[in-house]
Amino acid sequence: MLDATLKQQLSQYLAMLREPIELVASLGDDAKSAETRELLTTIAALSDKVTATFEGDDARKPSFLIRRTSNPEACVRFAGVPLGHEFTSLVLALLWAGGHPPKVEDAVLQQIRELDGEYSFEMYFSLSCHNCPDVVQALTLMALNNPNVHATLIEGGAFQAEVEERGVMAVPAVFLDGQMWGSGKMDVAEILAKLDTNAGAKAAAKLAEKAPFEALVVGGGPAGAAAAIYTARKGFSTGIAAERMGGQVQDTMGIENFISVPYTEGPKLAGALASHVAEYEIDAMNLLRAEKLIPAKELGGYHEVVFDNGASLKARSLVLTTGARWRQLGVPGEAEYQTKGVAYCPHCDGPLFKGKRVAVIGGGNSGVEAAIDLANIVGSVTLIEFDTKLRADQVLVDKLASMPNVTILTNAMTTEVTGDGAKVNGIKYKDRATDVEHLIELEGIFVQIGLVPNTEWLKGSGLELSPRGEIVINEKCATNIPGVFAAGDATTVPYKQIIIAMGEGAKAALSAFDFLIRNEAPAQIAQGAQKAAAPVA
Picture (spheres, rainbow, N blue to C red):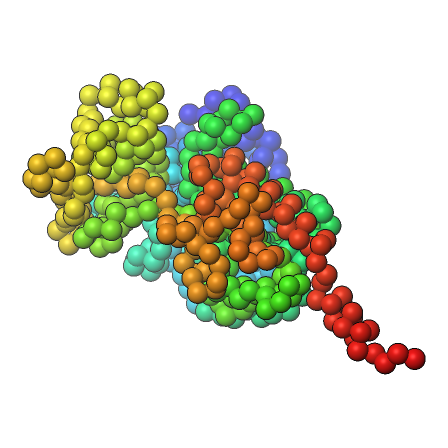
């Protein structure tokens, strides 16, 4: 199951264990149980601090507990075989159970330990989901550091009947005390913020204590990271406030056009961005959703950004890099059936539709790539494109056309998502050439129709937006408000690409630097005014 290289790496990790741990498996007679037995036997053979037993009596088979021998209540349960994207999660669970300290701020660990009440989590993941590991690792960390937090982490492919019974059609999916509690990517700070009712007030209090920045970046994606690094390198006090560090790149799977890097994945690149930002004296503030911009009343004054927790930050210059999100169809049934058959991430949710009929909406690169990936998993794919032809690169169109279980519909307008109240059962589209409406019976719909800029919060601020809601910038990334700059997918810059966003972020930061050195700080302005008003001796 584990090749020689993985075994060697795992052996090196297990050498970091500080105290003994136990693996307690509950197995059946199926092939997955046999894989689980082989995996746990291999792990136990690599360290004298690991023991594996196979006499567990949990109802889910296969599953296994990882627990600290000295404190059995500190445990986490995996159901299924956590390989693929979750192998790292398995390794971290072993290390943390064995006393190896996690790379988490002490304040976060303290918040976990101070949680009141008892929490029983069940979380479903797929082995191909790149959003799931953050949730798996967050719940693992919590379960191993608070005996009142219980976590069972379930590989959906190994428990297909359970997944269908509970109506799980998108991962990561988190249940709390048997009820659906959350879906989509979440890190430990986000989970704690949902559980700790005082988290917002605590965060707001901390922000209120911060002095104004010389440069404040709003948004934590590639453009935001580049802007923060460039302003910090110029010696200015810099803050970066983001709703989610890494931004939309966290939801991107394969990246093959990042020059000098033939292939990487979004979460890996997002981690590298965060690590690079951490190399500088940058005040990085996560889980902050901007709600309002209050521009400076005079040149050289402070701009203010108000966040959803009620707190605000001030700065002499701003770089807005709030990015974009997936565009929705906006047709009846779409909102009702989100996570019930309507999905936006084929890599995450595709395995849940194994052998089923699905549609992909969108004929650009994203849509065609999604259809190609899904065709290798699902029973059939129908690609629906509004235009008269597909807009993807020809190499992708040729690949799609060669796949036997794919149907391509062009000049077709999606009009409705249908369902039975619990899940999707079809999609309606109109043939634009004939105006005839058709119904396709299916189980899943993947929407891939472009992006919408995250700029609603800027309306009414006086900042100029395009008819599409993008921040209007010039060749230097300057907006119509002095001292406010913008970069990346939220702006009017053409071609929404990661590498372009990074370059634009650097450019915006250099423009902010030029603005700062050419305009006096508020303290200097006040000092000058005092001197001018002083009586002449």
